[in-house]
Image 1 (tube, rainbow, N blue to C red):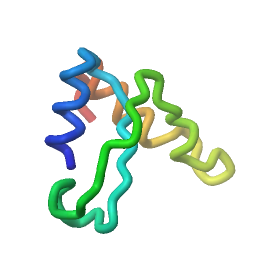
Image 2: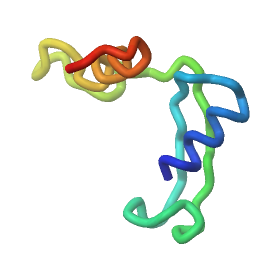
Image 3: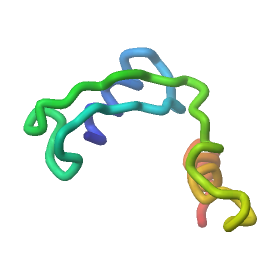
Image 4: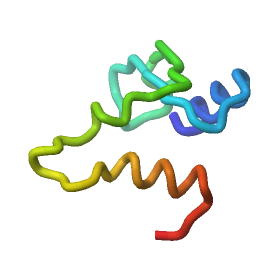
Length: 73
């Protein structure tokens, strides 16, 4: 599914995009699962992926910023 997400991001010309999939089995390729890309979000809601009650800083946001800015861990 990573390749499908990368291709979709390339089509719309974005380096930072949230890709929503609908699949029956997330452990196989998009084609094998008969799934689809449902939506592309150029302003993905990283706040949906962490619980501020349990995490001081959202892990997904940190990883995304590091990747975008090409920073090391």
